[in-house]
Image (cartoon, rainbow, N blue to C red; front, side, top):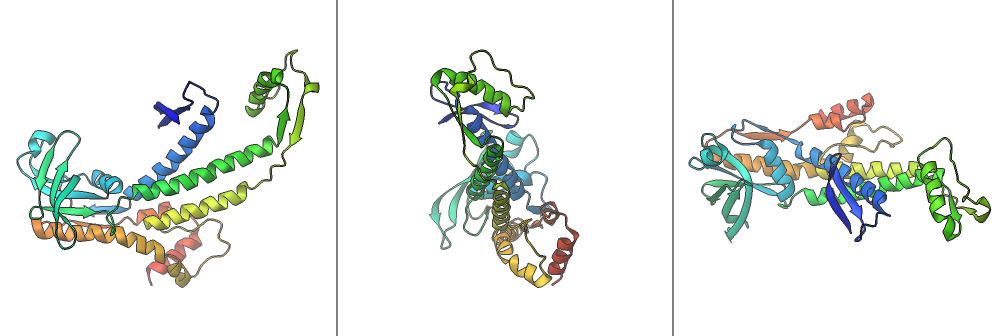
Length: 317
């Protein structure tokens, strides 16, 4: 297992080896960076999918989506007495992390709820003075599913890197043990694109044997696979997206059919938020709402005007 040594350029600095052996540090760190890169991208998209409307100032919608993404539920309630002590402002509404427990009603919704925050704040509530906001219809967080796709994407991405490297180094080198360190230093210069490689008197080329491994170039096929996995992840989230390697454009009706799974996935998350808004408005006399963030359609589109026209035709159906 690798050990984590703080952060480096926004990513975990992972070093491998139980006894300070750094033989595999570079590849392990590259793996970790690639996985975290895709996980952070997918997480950002997941947490920016919905726009909340008419939300009180005391509610942080970014934190609300963050909580739903990582924990699958959050609690909306009103606390007049303790807010000023912990948040240094007037009392009002909050949407926080929640620990659920106690008896369940006939729809398996817990009656006991304890909202909490990292600063020590806690608030005990029940079904009469609070509303649980669920992330989706199966009441699970999105984080686990995005980890699943991030792992797939990083595996393919790293395979692309290795395949590209294989075009530069399509050989295996055989040498005696005495030449190993010298050849490793030569390899580092070659890998670093050194224009000249200098060897000392210990570099005995007659003791080396090179074997061509015949690494085929498949990076383009792996890139197509990665695009398909990314499109699948977008469908899981409910964000329209098509693989960039599709060979022909779809007419409006075909586009509508192809986006059926995407809309169903989005509906699972959006409807739970809308249902929570209805319950909150009824319980507290508010007028909050939530909608899908249409800007994401433009952010994830490849910029082709014909695709945009197809989408507009689909929206107008």
